[in-house]
Image (cartoon, rainbow, N blue to C red):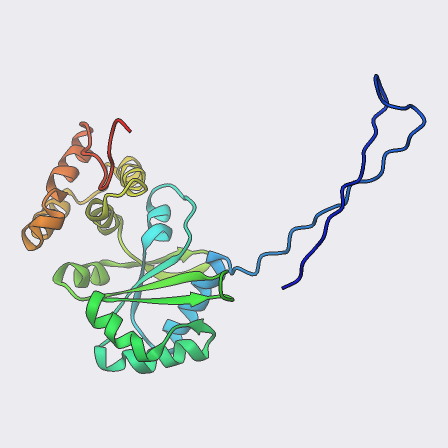
Length: 239
């Protein structure tokens, strides 16, 4: 590890209490080391290249898709929903590693079976950008995949989840950052939203997972009626 030792240079200013004949010594210029962290654009492009090369069906979701349907915002990763059988996960992880992603193929299948997600890291240790791959493993997610439409994201033509499905994703997660995304989607597409479709799948999600997603219909109704919204998950008011 390189250590940089900085010395203090006395700086004498002209004016009251300072010798007028003294000359100020220059302060050292500290130049920050350039970051080696890949941008989200770079991670997204590399993720698309990998999925297309390996012929893995995918749909863009997450913050990038939400920004396209609502209002663009800062995001730290690229999210895709993919259709990949468990028997092909190890080989896919090997291909990802060969393409420069940080992933352990021996653990990939366990992660896929356990939580239905693979995380690929791009960049040097400590300065990595994640590419998250979510399994298309339910009736709702298969519907999301089927309804996806081609569009441009970060300059690339790709399948993108529909505005209704992105709204449902946000209603399910309902974190502090998801609420403005949901509001922006409704505000932008209020007259075009397929409301019966939204109610159908909000009810389905609530019935399938009442403990985690039981409030999705109520959140949707409040959003459409522009009434007070339920607080985000994990939010503690008054603190």
